Every structure is written in structure tokens, then in C-alpha cells.
Length: 116
Image (cartoon, rainbow, N blue to C red; front, side, top):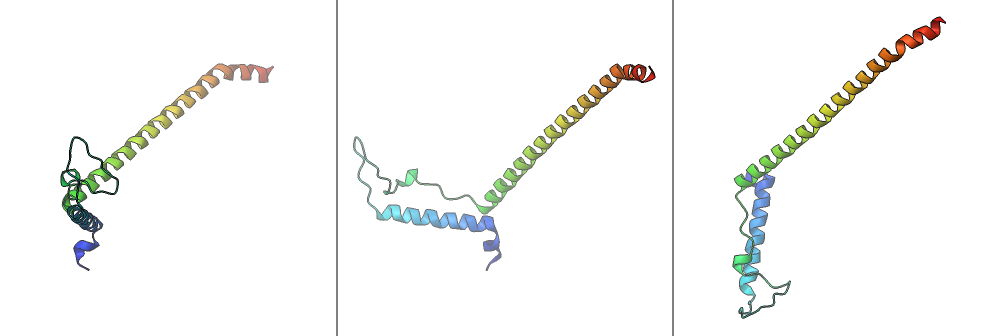
């Protein structure tokens, strides 16, 4: 196997190119009715070439898009983790504040109750 076929991006690009080529061959073999004031298009009939899918992008472009998508996902994950950390820190800070307030209010009362 050549090394470019082992690369999943290249294999995907080749597969898409073959699908588009077979699709365009089917479109040329089937006859399309001339367009009049209206035309009926059935689901099994081929679309005109202008409406067909464009050929797939190059493998290098697919790799760049894949890397960009991965970087976006990493950034989103980092933002989620940062938000979670911030919320956790805020929660702990508020809990510590509640504990301090409780101790400040009730420590003297507990002392007086135990002494009496």
C-alpha cells in the first residue's frame, strides 16, 4: 500500500473523488428533460452538473480543516474547564466566608453556654 493511502484524510479525499466521478458519469448517462416553464425532478434522477457537489478539496486542505476543528474543540474544552474552575473557586470562597461568619457569630455564644 502506498503511504498516501494509509493516511485517512487522503483515503477519504480519494473516496469522495471516486464518488463524485461515478455520480457525474451517472448524470451524463441519464437524460434530463428539457426545462420548460416548470419541471418535475424525481428523487432518483440526477441533478444537473451545476447543482451537483463540487469535487472534494485537496488532502492538505482537509488536514488543515481537521487541525482547525481539533484546535477549536481544545479551546472550547479549555474554556469549559476554566469556567468550571472559576465556579468551583467561587463556591469554595463563599463556603469559607459562611464558615467564618458562623464562627464569628456563634463562637462567643458557645463559649458562654459551656461556661455556665
